[in-house]
Length: 203
Image 1 (cartoon, one colour):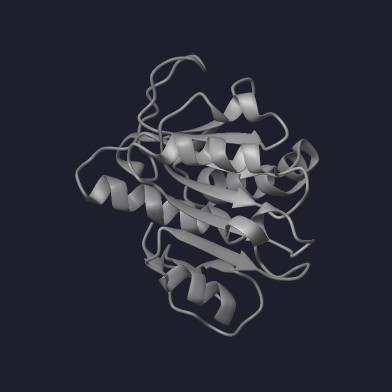
Image 2 (cartoon, one colour; image 1 turned 45 degrees about the vertical axis):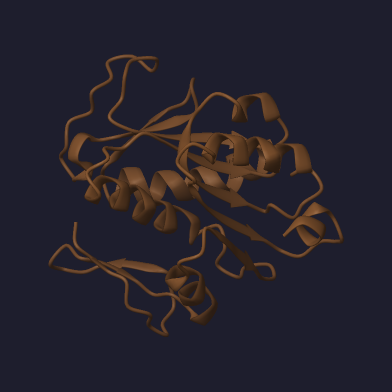
Protein backbone atom coordinates (compact mmCIF):
# COMPACT_ATOMS: atom_id res chain seq x y z
CA UNK A 1 0.00 0.00 0.00
CA UNK A 2 1.41 3.39 -1.00
CA UNK A 3 1.51 5.99 1.77
CA UNK A 4 1.17 9.75 1.55
CA UNK A 5 2.67 11.29 4.68
CA UNK A 6 1.59 14.83 3.86
CA UNK A 7 0.24 16.86 6.75
CA UNK A 8 -3.36 17.91 6.22
CA UNK A 9 -5.73 19.82 8.44
CA UNK A 10 -8.74 17.51 8.43
CA UNK A 11 -10.58 15.23 10.87
CA UNK A 12 -9.32 11.69 11.25
CA UNK A 13 -5.70 10.57 11.23
CA UNK A 14 -5.86 8.10 8.35
CA UNK A 15 -7.82 7.56 5.18
CA UNK A 16 -7.52 4.88 2.52
CA UNK A 17 -8.24 6.51 -0.82
CA UNK A 18 -10.11 4.89 -3.71
CA UNK A 19 -6.82 3.99 -5.41
CA UNK A 20 -5.58 2.17 -2.29
CA UNK A 21 -3.25 4.86 -0.97
CA UNK A 22 -3.06 5.43 2.77
CA UNK A 23 -3.21 9.12 3.52
CA UNK A 24 -2.07 10.26 6.96
CA UNK A 25 -3.40 13.55 8.24
CA UNK A 26 -0.97 14.76 10.89
CA UNK A 27 -1.56 17.85 12.98
CA UNK A 28 1.36 20.21 13.59
CA UNK A 29 2.66 18.43 16.68
CA UNK A 30 2.52 15.01 15.05
CA UNK A 31 4.31 16.33 12.00
CA UNK A 32 7.13 17.74 14.15
CA UNK A 33 7.60 14.32 15.73
CA UNK A 34 7.39 12.64 12.31
CA UNK A 35 10.10 14.85 10.81
CA UNK A 36 12.51 14.55 13.73
CA UNK A 37 15.73 12.67 12.97
CA UNK A 38 16.72 12.39 16.65
CA UNK A 39 17.22 9.00 18.23
CA UNK A 40 14.87 9.87 21.10
CA UNK A 41 11.63 11.60 20.15
CA UNK A 42 9.01 12.51 22.76
CA UNK A 43 5.50 13.71 22.00
CA UNK A 44 4.00 15.41 25.06
CA UNK A 45 0.35 16.39 24.72
CA UNK A 46 -2.92 16.46 26.59
CA UNK A 47 -5.71 13.93 26.46
CA UNK A 48 -6.89 13.10 22.92
CA UNK A 49 -3.77 14.73 21.48
CA UNK A 50 -3.31 11.97 18.89
CA UNK A 51 -0.46 10.22 20.67
CA UNK A 52 -1.49 6.55 20.74
CA UNK A 53 -2.85 6.65 17.18
CA UNK A 54 0.45 8.12 15.95
CA UNK A 55 2.57 5.29 17.42
CA UNK A 56 1.87 2.48 14.91
CA UNK A 57 2.50 4.72 11.92
CA UNK A 58 5.83 5.91 13.33
CA UNK A 59 6.78 2.31 14.10
CA UNK A 60 5.75 1.15 10.62
CA UNK A 61 8.11 3.68 9.10
CA UNK A 62 10.96 2.48 11.32
CA UNK A 63 10.30 -1.10 10.24
CA UNK A 64 10.16 -0.13 6.56
CA UNK A 65 13.45 1.77 6.80
CA UNK A 66 15.20 -1.25 8.30
CA UNK A 67 13.92 -3.31 5.37
CA UNK A 68 14.94 -0.61 2.89
CA UNK A 69 18.48 -0.54 4.27
CA UNK A 70 18.82 -4.20 3.38
CA UNK A 71 19.28 -5.26 6.99
CA UNK A 72 16.18 -7.44 7.08
CA UNK A 73 13.66 -7.03 9.87
CA UNK A 74 13.82 -8.31 13.41
CA UNK A 75 12.07 -7.36 16.61
CA UNK A 76 10.42 -4.08 17.51
CA UNK A 77 8.84 -3.02 20.80
CA UNK A 78 5.47 -1.40 21.48
CA UNK A 79 5.11 -0.78 25.20
CA UNK A 80 2.22 0.76 27.12
CA UNK A 81 2.44 1.97 30.71
CA UNK A 82 -0.08 -0.51 32.12
CA UNK A 83 -1.78 -3.69 30.96
CA UNK A 84 -5.13 -1.87 30.83
CA UNK A 85 -3.58 0.86 28.67
CA UNK A 86 -2.11 -1.84 26.44
CA UNK A 87 -5.37 -3.78 26.13
CA UNK A 88 -7.77 -0.86 25.70
CA UNK A 89 -5.73 1.59 23.62
CA UNK A 90 -2.39 0.44 22.23
CA UNK A 91 -3.34 -3.07 21.08
CA UNK A 92 -6.44 -1.95 19.11
CA UNK A 93 -4.45 0.80 17.37
CA UNK A 94 -1.59 -1.55 16.49
CA UNK A 95 -3.94 -4.19 15.14
CA UNK A 96 -5.97 -1.65 13.18
CA UNK A 97 -2.89 -0.37 11.36
CA UNK A 98 -0.83 -3.54 10.84
CA UNK A 99 -3.63 -6.12 10.42
CA UNK A 100 -6.57 -4.26 8.94
CA UNK A 101 -5.19 -1.19 7.16
CA UNK A 102 -1.72 -2.23 5.97
CA UNK A 103 -2.54 -5.98 6.00
CA UNK A 104 1.01 -6.94 6.86
CA UNK A 105 0.47 -8.13 10.45
CA UNK A 106 -0.98 -11.15 12.22
CA UNK A 107 -1.64 -11.03 15.96
CA UNK A 108 -0.61 -13.95 18.16
CA UNK A 109 -2.46 -13.41 21.45
CA UNK A 110 -0.58 -16.02 23.49
CA UNK A 111 2.82 -14.46 22.81
CA UNK A 112 1.43 -10.93 22.52
CA UNK A 113 3.26 -10.27 19.27
CA UNK A 114 2.27 -9.05 15.84
CA UNK A 115 3.95 -11.18 13.21
CA UNK A 116 5.09 -9.20 10.17
CA UNK A 117 4.54 -10.60 6.69
CA UNK A 118 7.56 -11.40 4.53
CA UNK A 119 8.30 -8.45 2.29
CA UNK A 120 6.16 -6.14 4.45
CA UNK A 121 3.56 -6.01 1.72
CA UNK A 122 -0.16 -6.70 1.69
CA UNK A 123 -0.64 -10.31 0.69
CA UNK A 124 2.86 -11.21 1.87
CA UNK A 125 3.44 -14.65 3.35
CA UNK A 126 3.46 -15.26 7.11
CA UNK A 127 6.19 -17.74 8.00
CA UNK A 128 4.98 -19.00 11.37
CA UNK A 129 2.62 -21.95 11.75
CA UNK A 130 2.68 -21.66 15.54
CA UNK A 131 3.21 -18.63 17.72
CA UNK A 132 6.71 -19.72 18.79
CA UNK A 133 7.94 -20.39 15.23
CA UNK A 134 10.50 -18.20 13.48
CA UNK A 135 8.96 -15.05 11.99
CA UNK A 136 10.08 -12.61 9.33
CA UNK A 137 9.69 -9.87 11.92
CA UNK A 138 7.80 -9.19 15.14
CA UNK A 139 6.31 -6.33 17.07
CA UNK A 140 6.55 -7.37 20.70
CA UNK A 141 3.65 -5.89 22.65
CA UNK A 142 4.17 -5.38 26.37
CA UNK A 143 3.23 -3.28 29.39
CA UNK A 144 5.84 -1.53 31.51
CA UNK A 145 4.32 -3.08 34.64
CA UNK A 146 5.92 -6.42 33.73
CA UNK A 147 9.55 -5.42 33.19
CA UNK A 148 10.66 -9.05 32.75
CA UNK A 149 8.75 -9.10 29.46
CA UNK A 150 10.98 -6.31 28.16
CA UNK A 151 14.16 -8.32 28.59
CA UNK A 152 13.55 -10.97 25.93
CA UNK A 153 14.50 -9.30 22.67
CA UNK A 154 17.12 -7.37 20.76
CA UNK A 155 14.98 -4.63 19.28
CA UNK A 156 15.53 -2.20 16.43
CA UNK A 157 13.08 0.50 17.54
CA UNK A 158 10.51 1.08 20.27
CA UNK A 159 7.27 2.99 20.65
CA UNK A 160 6.38 3.76 24.27
CA UNK A 161 2.87 4.97 25.09
CA UNK A 162 2.06 7.01 28.21
CA UNK A 163 5.70 6.80 29.22
CA UNK A 164 5.16 9.55 31.79
CA UNK A 165 2.74 7.59 33.97
CA UNK A 166 4.06 6.38 37.35
CA UNK A 167 3.68 2.75 36.28
CA UNK A 168 6.26 3.32 33.55
CA UNK A 169 9.22 3.20 35.90
CA UNK A 170 12.85 4.15 35.41
CA UNK A 171 13.61 0.42 35.51
CA UNK A 172 11.28 -0.19 32.57
CA UNK A 173 12.87 2.67 30.61
CA UNK A 174 16.34 1.27 31.26
CA UNK A 175 15.17 -2.21 30.19
CA UNK A 176 13.98 -0.75 26.86
CA UNK A 177 17.34 0.98 26.36
CA UNK A 178 19.17 -2.31 26.94
CA UNK A 179 17.03 -4.00 24.27
CA UNK A 180 17.89 -1.22 21.80
CA UNK A 181 21.59 -0.97 22.62
CA UNK A 182 22.96 -3.31 19.94
CA UNK A 183 21.34 -1.47 17.02
CA UNK A 184 21.12 1.93 18.75
CA UNK A 185 17.43 1.78 17.91
CA UNK A 186 15.21 4.83 17.91
CA UNK A 187 12.51 5.57 20.48
CA UNK A 188 9.19 7.36 20.25
CA UNK A 189 7.78 8.20 23.67
CA UNK A 190 4.29 9.64 23.96
CA UNK A 191 2.57 10.85 27.10
CA UNK A 192 0.46 13.37 28.88
CA UNK A 193 2.68 15.21 31.38
CA UNK A 194 1.75 13.82 34.79
CA UNK A 195 4.49 14.91 37.21
CA UNK A 196 8.17 15.25 37.97
CA UNK A 197 9.28 11.64 37.52
CA UNK A 198 12.26 10.13 35.70
CA UNK A 199 11.01 11.49 32.36
CA UNK A 200 11.59 15.02 33.59
CA UNK A 201 14.86 14.22 35.36
CA UNK A 202 16.43 11.89 32.78
CA UNK A 203 15.04 13.20 29.50
